[in-house]
Amino acid sequence: MMNVLITAGGSGIGFAMGQAFAKAGWQVWVTDIDEGALQDCPDDWERDVVDASDAAAMAKLFDRVGAHWGSLNAVCANAGIAGPTALVEDIELDDWRRCVSVNLESSFLTAKFAGPMLKDTKGSMVLTSSTAGIYGFPNRAPYASAKWGVIGLMKTLAMEWGPSGVRVNAICPGAVEGPRMTGVMEREAAAKGTTLETIRDGYAAGVSMRQLVQAEDIANMAAFLCSDGARLVSGQVMAVDGHTENPDPKA
Ligand code: NAD
Image (cartoon, rainbow, N blue to C red):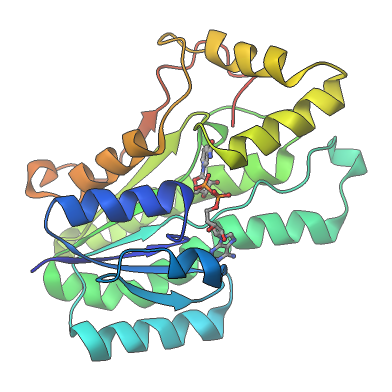
């Protein structure tokens, strides 16, 4: 049976990824910092409380995966936080560092420790970037910088690992419906002195498909990218955003 490890898989996009892989017959292992969220995951999923930006904890996690599964077919580096909403000159260095650490360093650590196992299985890696990794993002410089970094990491990994048969791709979700996006839009509404409704409508109006994305849309792409159907797809930036026309109102 094929198996996949997903960071930040206790809820949101990572949880939906777990469901999509499980539906396709994969064994699933999720990690998260939220123990309660992990408890609510299906009984047959492996789970661990791990901060994806903690190098020592990540090293131990992949030791456990190796000991328990003996091999790894796919990994989804999905951990990320929104970081501060402010102009660059008003952002504290500590807040910048935490945002870059959880979004980018976690992806590096996931690749570093999963790499040898993925080479053994000729497996595949998916990194969660964002449309903020394709466009600039006023008031969200740490997040946009980290998500552009994720694309650079993905492109480089695809070149380093391709000759070993390992594929690496990034998904760039647009604004995904859910509690996280509501929080982001509430902060943006406060920063712009307008209502949540106005901000939400602005996000939907900014994409050709005129709607926000569902977590399942991202999850389906992740499962496809790790399937044989995508056997020669590597080094790609897959936007799942309904086609962004106006990159200003986005996640
Ligand atoms: P979320 O805020 O719903 O969080 C999902 C899970 O991540 C939570 O269970 C949380 O406990 C966990 N988590 C947070 N920090 C962690 C850490 N350091 N280590 C391990 N787990 C951690 O997030 P989401 O909306 O599902 O986003 C998942 C990924 O998708 C992130 O990388 C995010 O940047 C990206 N993304 C999200 C959106 C969106 O609109 N939601 C859009 C573009 C990109």
